[in-house]
Image (tube, rainbow, N blue to C red):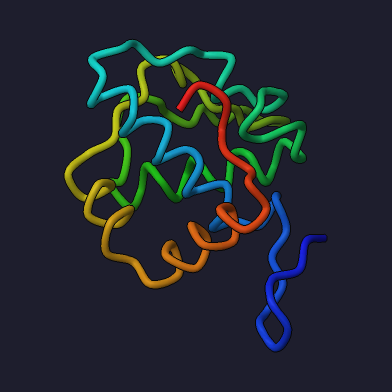
Length: 123
C-alpha cells in the first residue's frame, strides 16, 4: 500500500476509485486523440487492472456502465460466471467526463497518482 503525506489517508493502486480514474482517464485520452481503445489496456490482466479478482473487475465495469460513465461493454451473466464483454467498444460518456473533472474523490486520486508517479501506460 502506498501512503500519501503524513496525516492523510492511504490509498492503494487497486482501490476502486484509483481503478475508475485510470479507466476513465484512458478512455478520455483515446476520445480526445481519436484513437481506438486497445482491448489489452482494459483487460483484467492488463496495465490498468493488473490481475484484480474477476468479481472486482466485473463490479467496477458494472458500476461504470450503470452510472452511465461509459458505454459499449456489457455484463453477461451465466449460471456459474459473470463476464465483461466488448471492453474494446468502451467509450467515455459526457457523464464520465464530468465525473472525471468534478468529483472530489477523483481529485484525491489524481494527487495520489501524481505523488507516486503511477500513470497508465499509453496516456
